[in-house]
Every structure is written in structure tokens, then in C-alpha cells.
Picture 1 (tube, rainbow, N blue to C red):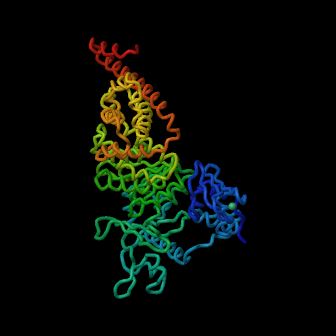
Picture 2: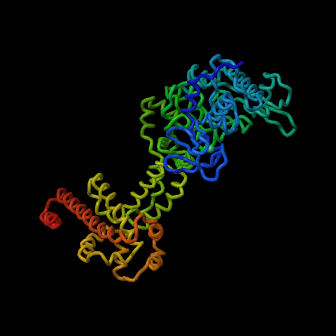
Length: 569
Ligand SMILES: [Zn+2]
């Protein structure tokens, strides 16, 4: 009989899982404020009374009073016994179920012989390494000690075509060796070893079982430098990460995972005391990789070559990471100096130097904005509109939530710089951004109100209108629209949209015109008049600070005169 599953294991497992993911993979949920809601799967209903709280990691149905954790949900939904539900969830997370008595191994899901044959192959490769001084010398020349080689189970596949089959004493053309990707069938139907004369890196799943191998040539032999197992029933390159099992075994707690390109990098970093690195297996970092990475760490730093190909790879990785991000999950990218890889870098810089390099990684979202705004003139309306258009599809990949809101805000800030940017350049950054945020907020609101009832502009006191128009250059789209209404007093929203239809700002106008106002049409004029005065005051304050800064930088009579002229009456 299997031993009891300790409560600590269950708690640990529940801490790693997101109840929203678990439920969403089985039914449709809609975001409703902080929580998610959907049609209750446990009773018949037409309107959703089933609610999931990500904060509490708890679900509750207001209709049938069913409630519980991710585990309770799986038991009820998948109709599993408690232990089965634990095993199912653990498997989904790549965890091995702990038992108090240590007995009762978890039930394997695929042909157990496949794991067995891979494990035997690993033993054979390790055994062969000990008998092959050239291979041992090669590892030593790369600075690896026996301890690290053992921790990672590094081995060697000797030259020759039938070694593995002879060692394992399997019948010729054993289907398991073929299925495990260890042998290849020739055209004549004869099976031969896939890996020959290569350093062998066993690839493990998160439960520690060997699921495939990576093989590296010792030198300049013919054939590819790196060779991986093909896709098999147990090995899926798209979601596996080399070194993850070893990192989890070495570290009690992982705050950050570093993604590098090759197994040699992972092993070399571990050799120098950086145990938290993993490598994808000859594929780009995909969404499934990130899902897995974020199960174990909140911060993922992806390391790339500094060349064109490396930058392209970084971009691809970032794109794939976006759907897995939230405000707790951080992605960063870092580019290696020319001609370096993590292995060479840590050998020359040491652990501290390498970690400094990683600490300087660029936040992925900064990389996103930076790359998309390349070549755009953000001081022009056109440039900002183009940036907004370019960023939108990427932004939409980020799941709804706080992070997405933040990004949208950042985009607004970037694209809302408008004409002020040039004149505000000399101001201290903090003052500038506070003022810009306030100006932007008020002028955005005025623009929206004006699009609802264009005629209100003409109802504002003429003195207030001209006082605002002293800051024409700072008004952007609002100023353009107000001028248009000045010259076209009968203009309605259709006419305005037609007039702007070829302009880059058309989208923004349309969007604002469609905004549903939460106030009655009768109070629009009042709010608008007040807003005009408020905006004017902010702009005057801004102009004063600007003049003061200029005066401090370059004290002359003309500057002083300008400043005095701006002083509040
Ligand atoms: Zn219910």
C-alpha cells in the first residue's frame, strides 16, 4: 500500500498552481473585476454564479454553494479520488508525489519501458565516459570537474554503430530503442546508434526521469556539432528545458531562471556556482517553455548573442513570453558581448562578474518599446500614432490584468508626449512627467467632451478661450480641433471625423467619439468650461517652470523679462 501524501506536499503544490489556470483549462471563465466568473459546472444554470478568486486561490458558487481549492475543483470536475487528483495535478506541474512511507511510486502515463531503456542508455554512456580518456580530457579542458559531470550525468557515446544494442542485449531493431530515439533504422531496415563519438548530456523531465539526450562532438568532426534526440512519446522539445531538474535539485528556492542556448553553458555555469540556468533544446523559447519557467521562478532572464540572429531570437522569445506574463512575472533580455557565450563569459569574469552582467539585463517590455519605436520620430503626431499602432498587437497578447493596464498607461505616456516634448526637454524629468501626466489627463478629457458636443467650445467665455490659446503649441489635437470649430461653428461629429479621416490622429478621435460618458449631456458644458480653466492654469505653471529653468541655466535680462511676464498676476 502506498504511503500517505504529506500535507506539506499538498500545500506546496497548491502554492505553485494557479487555480485560474486549472479551471480555465476545463471551462470558460470571464474576467469580472478582480475575480473570474462562469457558468457553474456543478449545477444547472443560465446566468453565471460561479466565481474564482485568484487572490484567495479559491472558487465558490453562489448558486449551489460548491467551493474549494484547485484540488477540490479537479476532484469534482474530473471525478477523481483525492489521491488521483493530487497525482493528476502533480503530473501537470511536473512534480513527483511524495509519500510518507516512500513507497507506492506514481503511476506512469506512457510506456514504462521507454523510460527504462533511456535510463539504461544513460548508464551505458556514463560507463563509456570512464573508459574514454579523450572524452574525459575534453571535459577537463572545458573546466568541468567530476562532481559536475556526475551531477548532470554526463556521458560519452563511443564511435561505432551497434554499441548500445550490444550493451543492452536487445534484439536487433528493438522497437523501444527506436521509439526512444536512440537508434535509427536505415533504408535496408537495419538499426544503428543515433549518437556516436559524442559527449552525452541526458535530458530529464522535472521528475528527474531521462527523456532524451543531447550529444556534442568533441572537436571538429564531421556532422552537426550538437545533436538532440528526436521528438518521442516522452520527449517534447517545445516544452522541455535542459537543466531545470538539476536546478531544482540544487536550489531550495529559485527566484530567477537564466535561459541560455546550450547544455555546455548550463553545465559550465553550474560549475562556477550559478545553478539556476536552463537551456532550450535547439528550439526557440516558446510559450510552453515560459509557462513552465514561471512555475518555478518569477523572474526569467533570457541570454542571447549580440548579433543580428541573437536579436531576432530575443524578439521571438519575448513575443512568446507575452501571453504568460502578469505583474508578478518578469522577463528580461541580455545580449552577450561579441564572440562570447555564457561559458566563456563566466570563465573569464567569474561568478560575480557573470551575475553583474545578468543583473544588468533589460526588462523585456522596455526592449519591446525600444525596438518598436526605432526609426520613429516620437516628437511628431505621425510617429506617435505609428508607435501606438505597432505596439497594440503585442499589448493584446498580454493577459488582461494589472500588467496590461500598466503597459497601456506607458503607451499613452509615450504617445502622449506631443508638442510639449521639444519645449519641455530642458525641465527636470520628474517635474516634466508629473506635469505631462496632469496636462495629458485634463486635455484628453476635454477632447472627449468636445467630440460629444463640438459646439461647447464656442460657449466658453472668449477671454478663457484666448488665455488657453496662448499655449496653442502645447495643446496638440485638442488645439487643432478647437481651431477647426472656431472656423466651422456648425460642424458636427460626422463632419469632424470626415475632415480628419486621412490624419494619423483619426483613430484616436474615433475612439474618443465612441467613448461612453458617465455623465449626462446637460452637465458636459459645465465640466468642459471648468476643464478649460484648469488646463490653462496647468500650462501656465508649466511655462513658468520652464522659463525659470531656462533662466537658471542662462541668466540674462531677456530671460528674466520673459519670466516676469509669466508670473501670476
Ligand atoms: Zn453551482
